[in-house]
Length: 440
Image 1 (cartoon, rainbow, N blue to C red):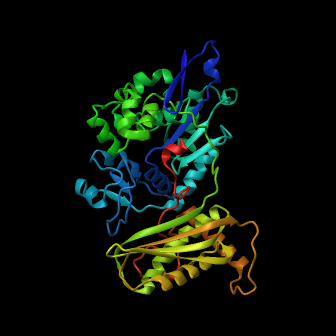
Image 2 (image 1 turned 135 degrees about the vertical axis):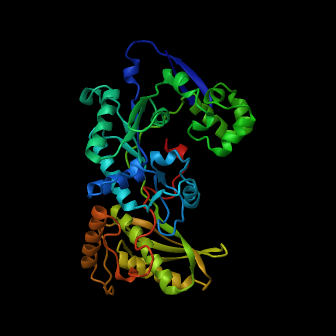
Image 3 (image 1 turned 60 degrees about the horizontal axis):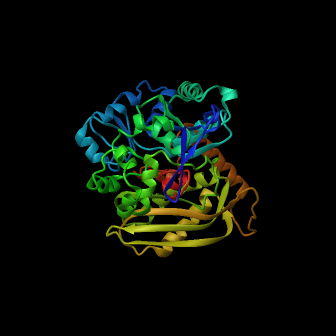
């Protein structure tokens, strides 16, 4: 039997003897939530008395249901029959399916569902890596004595997620993260697939080359021009030829086509988050200060909630502005005392905005907090007019209500009759993510 490893793009073949080798290989699972945002929204609605399952009708999550602007973030299986694609505009999706049900994204709900998934997975291994809000890697190595063989354990995990959390997942199993991720992309939904090295030729090589991780549209076009149309074509190509035409990326995808990848599963949050940001493109031009402040408040709501969820405080706050003619500028302010308080952050955001805004019509606004520190200990200014402890209790109560009942269950009176979203933007696991390949 042979195993493969690569150093600087050179394949090394190692002869391995003995019947116990396979048991010593790492066992990695990749867990991928099926149509995550839509599934989580559907589960929430069903659990709160709704009788219609969004997953059974043509439906999407994305954009604004009222203005019908934005992009598709997730789609149901019935929506796929209309050739609706993730990332396309809401307008385009409606052209394909006029009766499409559109649901606004609720990132606070998604974070809660993602955390519930992580909690369940950690019952099966102490080493679980949240790869994105709806994907995880689990190192199952040496866990067979506790939960059985990998395939049985994966089926048990899949069924528990479905029965206890209400949504379905695909699970891929292999000896490395790349092959596990590729396996989880096989037939969906609600399935477990293996892709061990000896299965690569049968299961992976016949697939179109664009199905390979890290082969995007631009790389696909270049590969097609080189006569490479399947993963097998790529795997059997001369790596020097690929390097000549695609530089180091050519070697990377050649390794992936041959199933070569050896990065470890890293427990959640191996590095501290550097900053948390939130932005929104506004469907109309903002020309007055009051409206701009309300939109900034809706952004601060999710930024501050995410900050508290990370048990962090921010010392630097910045505001970015894009005008209607696509000019971009920003400004920032350093705080004397770090904070995670919604009201405090909003106060500084308004000051920054008022200092920098040139009165030009605004198309996009953004808020970012950085220079984060632990919020376990903090110094309170003698000149701070806000009762900090009281404000912390209020923020905590609001966070708990929104996580339990949805982001719009409680909002500030200033948004009444404003036609503005009181809680805007997304919550990500990490901001400014590096290239995905570096996380595999």
